[in-house]
Image (cartoon, rainbow, N blue to C red; front, top):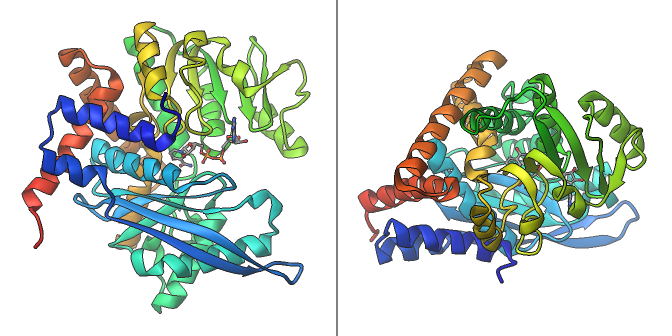
Length: 414
Ligand code: NAD
């Protein structure tokens, strides 16, 4: 059984390399990483004691452009998680045609137990520690689980001060008043909503009253909920790490956000049944959107899923074995590298706007985003129909081939 996110990512890559087939040389290059940096981050805590945290930045491959990928703060973060996520970023950027390679980074910490000052010192010292390998033309971080606009602003400020001048293009997902892009905060969620709308057309389902379940109502999940509410869908169940709630008649996005802000969980949300994250995944619905952590749909629960379609909001939420079982049961999965690519697409827009010091309207951002995601969806869908492949295999085939072609034409140095 494959339970580790890295093993899942590697197994998916190996399967696709065999299918293409990739040359053994390129297969070897892409199974490995360009660079993996581990750093110690000593911080003076508010109580006067010093504590040393561990941070990482993993760079997978930059054949198609500078490395790009989020920064995650999580107590259970491992190098293997980051390797999986960095490799997936290489495929995602390639699939949607943005000129970046893949990276991911983070710090082993529980931000919920840190004060704002501790979080700022941690972020600034981590930025300083990874400075030798990041840069606007080298590696551009972005938000991920437990990091946000504020964290990006600290990274940008620390880098700019050390660099000697204002360098907004060092991170994406920063506040708009210091060079962020309009539309970036909700881009991943909006992209997922566009993808659902696109996929539903092919499945002959109707957006109106479409029953949707969202596991993880954070940055990504809550934006999906907001846009789906606006499109007339019925979000029937949502969750946070503390558990979920279900109401088959539908949940209002505004009420959910207000309740979560006031209570810090969805526990006892009015007129809804409380449940665990595990049972939430097994409820009947039209579309299931896992938007929390990796490896949520596994060999153990894949046969209990009662959704008609799965759209991956999180990175790597479905294991290889679960994928096979879902395929047997004819439950299609729209893969993460397609479904949640909206974030990196608008990150790319932000990087372009920062380089030009010329900013676009939100409408322009959203239109360009929709155009890229719609074209990519069509490309993946046609390959999957033509060669009778799952959407994941089709998406991975397109993405890996593009990276392989870039490596091949650039050649080997020295
Ligand atoms: P977030 O921290 O804002 O939200 C995560 C949500 O999941 C929260 O509601 C949290 O309570 C919940 N959660 C945490 N652990 C859980 C568990 N074990 N079971 C169920 N719920 C749990 O993070 P986010 O930025 O929304 O990212 C969510 C996922 O989307 C991650 O897999 C991330 O890699 C992926 N992603 C994020 C972006 C982005 O732009 N933020 C882009 C692409 C992919």
